[in-house]
Image (cartoon, rainbow, N blue to C red):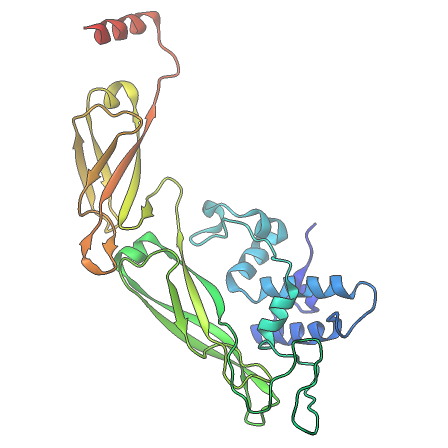
Length: 319
């Protein structure tokens, strides 16, 4: 039986995002190795970080709630998980300090001590920054999953985020929700980064909120198209005898939902590709122009042949 992330944080399944953050904050401060030297504190700190890493991410949390730790870490086939299923499997990066620093804005939350001359006290976190000094930590990266159809047409995605915002007293904070709008342009590529400046959490000693960066990932469907730059690759399964050797026509449903019939008069061999110019992905630099549609083939050989059929094939190939 997998571990119960809710029990690790001491919360229930219907706990809202803001209370998940509060639970992590309380436990992370309690069990941080720099503060708690009791046996088992380091492992507890790591498990708290893993639980928060899962439950604070809507996609991971939804997969965990439905399929448990085994499904989350083993991966769920899309036919069971639906569109956007967690198909790759989750692996915790085993860096609880990174989650701790990201949550608290990179500063030491245990102390706010300064010497009388205004210099900083070294507390093992790399020192505290001077009062009033503005700085901004590296941005927080989140995944944005889109289908090839989304990238072909372009679309608008609205994403709700919960972020910690400092109150005017500079010491306390509140959790506030905000909707970020992403206008996806036709032809955007895997790995495209979309930055929202100062839209992330604001730490206790950080006057500038963190930025949030969304990293574009493409959701691929089994036996469907894949993409390489501007080209779109489709796969067609054909039998050796009746189509690969004597020619055929192939029906392909394009990303803009057209069904096109493509005649092929050549012999289809293993490295053969049919290229259709202008039927691929929009080009980012000029979405009115499109790359190629490239059809690759999976040739199905017969499992067995009768002696008569073998003789006929032999005679046909010898003539």
